[in-house]
Amino acid sequence: MRVLPLGGIGEIGKNMTILEYEDKLLIVDVGLRFPTAEMVGIDLVLPDFSYLRGRVDDIEGIVITHGHEDHLGALPWVLRELRAEGAELPPIFGAPLTMAMARSKLDEHRLKDLDVEDVKAGEHLELGPFDVELIHMTHSIPDAVAVAVTTDVGTVLITGDYKFDQTPVDGKPADIARLAQLGADGLLLLCGDSTNADRPGFSPSESGVGPHLEQTFARCEGRIVVTCFASNIHRVQQVVDAAEQLGRKVALLGRSMRKNVNIGKSLGHIDVPDGMLVQPREIDSFPDEKLVIVSTGSQGEPLSALRRMAFSDHPQVELRRGDTIVFAATPIPGNERAVNETIDRLFHIGTTVITARDAPIHASGHGYAEELKLMLNLTKPTYVMPFHGDYKRLELHGKLAEAVGVPAENIFKGENGLPLELNAKGARFGKPERAGMVFVDGVEIGDVADVALRDRRMLSADGIFVVVATISEQDGTSVAEPEVIFRGVPFPDEAENLLDDIRDTVDKSLARAAKEGVHENDVVQGMLHDDLAQLVYERLRRRPMVLPVVVEV
Ligand SMILES: [Zn+2]
Ligand SMILES: [Zn+2]
Image 1 (tube, rainbow, N blue to C red):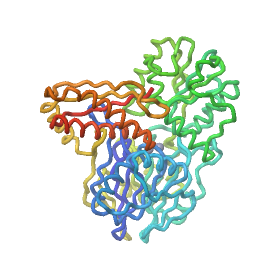
Image 2 (cartoon, rainbow, N blue to C red):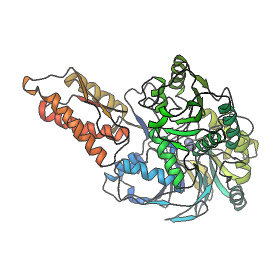
Image 3 (tube, protein in one colour):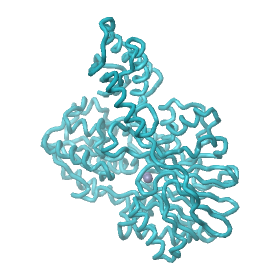
Image 4 (tube, rainbow, N blue to C red):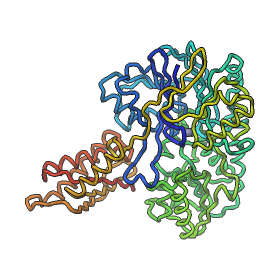
């Protein structure tokens, strides 16, 4: 049996692991990573999944541990590429909330006719030579699971992201009894979350955040804007509860916030009393002291609702002195600059800003050192391979395993692409497989050098068109004449009404996207890119770079 991590080792992001036995494959997680500042022009980073090329028929299934982007986000991209090989795509499994999020993503990428199945924690799946069981865990999104995979060789447990929250908001702590049972039956290998291996003690419970939110809100006289991850449905629940206690109503801002609350409501993960929600367009007519706005943008994301409010560029909400902005989230590594910039703009406007440094209004979704030890002691693995962390935290996780009695030679410090081979005799690293990063530049997948070179080639030969389309956040239709900016495009005289035709094409593409229910910004931009590139080529017989930018208002 082989365990091959393609991502998540030596990095936070793009978690993807392939288990292989008797030439059959099982995939656990298909995550992405957001680009660092120096990856100019790159939108997303995927794991290099070349290993799967030509082997789609061997894949028995794909299991997703939870709905975070670093575990689920690359799924549509990877499936799109694998489908291009013409083979039938494998079934996808996960807990109901995770699968609801997966379906929504796959729809946005127009990937249809896939077998996406809800699996409850505790159920077993027989997938070829693999017996797969999902085990309920606690994390900063509901329905997180660990995955236990058993073959004739033994059982491998991939923890996914977890903490041992004794008082989770939904009253469902991790299935400690089942983990202990795995340990009693003999666990071969533990692949565990290392994110907070450097933090001593136990992580604070999510339910401890609620009272602090309420205390914080109680001190505010004006409007309150809270920002947190839209997928942290229990955090949103606690914001709603605190607002209710103080007689305030709640408005949800940002598409992903509304979408996740809707999915969460339909699956019973969040309870919003009737009459509690205020529509964004009603915000202005509502008394300041009666309102809590819950917004996306806790990571300073460029087009998020909070970022736009901070830059006085939001269509519905104009922030002003007297408003309080509450950051119920901390920046994930790499986002600090964008978050600091957002906060500084908020100070410039004159709002009060409260972050997790000022009050305990955030709790990490990842267990601290004592929780990682608890996992090790419960499951008593023969071998340990730390997952999900930079090298420092993987090393520290290894040290924790040694501290609870795992022999140093049984702790495997992996690399992306380095398979751990397990059999009756023992475990050892095999020959490295190809692994690394694949970049998505809006529409296409490629090697970064290829993308950069191609871009430079296009710019120098044929110039660039930038097309800015302004669309309605409600229905995705065009609300203003598209702006067209071009530089270095060799323009023959006979192409003079090209600009009008470009504007027409933008309107047509957007109408088509709206009709097909496509909302994801990068997909809409992809459609615009394809239509515009075709038009420009037909008219100019050249291929300038076409850069569509979609702005929602
Ligand atoms: Zn993660
Ligand atoms: Zn996570």
